[in-house]
Length: 250
Ligand code: G
Ligand code: MN
Image (cartoon, rainbow, N blue to C red):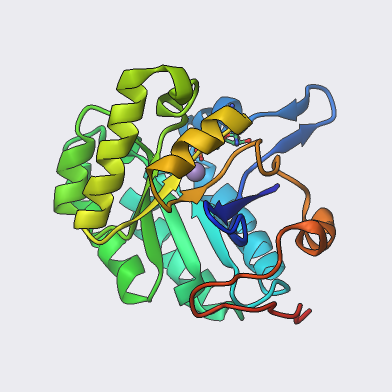
């Protein structure tokens, strides 16, 4: 599935995050939070990542060239030599410019201490290819700031736990406000995830011009619905290098 990420001011989609779903014949639709950890323990996450990344890049190749793809990586992808080599290979073979891709990583990638140097190397490799790297679920781990300090990241994604009810929760409000300032000072883009209601949207927008994602804009959708979504979404970006409508190039 693909969920749009939009500009706070324009609500213009700037890209989509690819989200894994497993349609099981017996269990129905299984959420990634359930099956990804199982796939990691079973040692098959590398193959799942490869399959999903190929599919996502194939789809992204049909989008207007101004739109980016965000893709979630798991700890194993970042800490095994084959994992990162296969990702580099898939990106290199795809028709999508690496500069249009953001890889999302979470702190769980660093749970084992020995993994830190490997993750750093992996992030550097992705950056050298021209890809962006975002720290996902920012603020929920034990040492988000250490990772922000030590890794060459390009974006942070503020976790939805700080966004839920932000309009009447002063500490959420102050945390998000401070994270906006922090990301700006560090030259990082900032994505606020999990924006579900108009009240949350209005409060987040009052804090600055970040990128937003959540049910308030669009739920994750199958690739087949993206064209229709782009036709109905705010389609004229008035600011920045993509001002004006970019035609589909499929
Ligand atoms: O960890 P990560 O941020 O990548 O997780 C994304 C998950 O959150 C996806 O499974 C997606 O379906 C879900 N999601 C996306 N938007 C919202 C939202 O506005 N509210 C909630 N509760 N979940 C969301
Ligand atoms: Mn994510």
